[in-house]
Image (cartoon, rainbow, N blue to C red; front, side, top):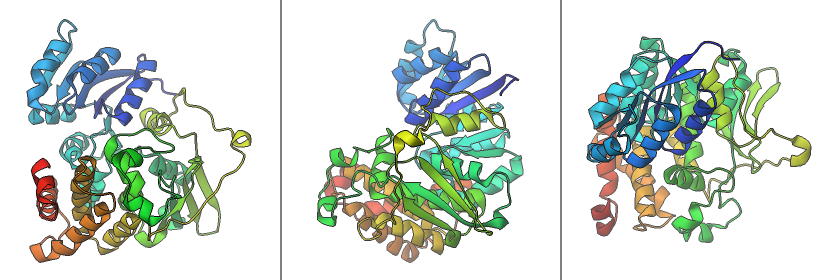
Length: 396
């Protein structure tokens, strides 16, 4: 049980993970003092969040939305600011705990700013490790920060590991719901619309991560993230499809024992684990009722129907710049799909093309700094954009 009051900052406060965090903070305002809430451009949403938790400061990364934020907070006593530098400044303010939930590569710089000032950082932005895993973990070590995974799968692995050495781990297994297309044939998947892909059977998430779940690209990115978080090689990581989403991660030890992290599919469970760390918070999440659940099923992922997962496995094995190129290409492809400029089946094809093109354009080395990671991301995006239809390039 948490006893001492803690100062916190929430990066990505208006997204699905951010709002779940705000819900927990609002229920425990006697335990937490919110220093800053940061979002991209949703002035009304951020102002509402800031008022709910009594934040000292609210910051939007999009400078154009600054006047709307100030108007929405007028009379509240909450400081309002806008712009990329203001967001970085807010992330760098010393606090006990930071939620890093700015999605995509855009979350890299503010998350690194939070890491550099030490304290605990709850990581919900997997792209930080996919784009710059080695450099990011080096920053964590230099700052003496505590990195806590928020993704339900990695949080389950952390809890299932139980503080034991990864040297005793034979395998770590991430579970996947299978997404909305688990039982669709290849032709039907290829013709899927954005509306089809956004109907996730288990989780309510933002559009980009929901599309990644439909392609299973998200699970592949999580494999890369797990590699860096736990220091486990790719040959000791795997994925199993588990539609009930009751088990989120499993650890198999060298003696054959298996431990698993189970919970109802509610992001407030892993968030609360990191927010209370090393203590526990009470949450309103539903409790897992195994008798009511009745049965749990498991199946191997189909890498033919879902080639995105296979591409992630190959990028992890290749190392170097490959994971960052894959992530950048995927972000470009998903945006084009959501804009209806390409088909669902084009997403993995664009990513594969970018990975093939990258060595010919000198994109081979893993970034050794945040700045190098950002530059690599920009180059990979440009490389992918060349493969888009002309109308899609203009829209992007």
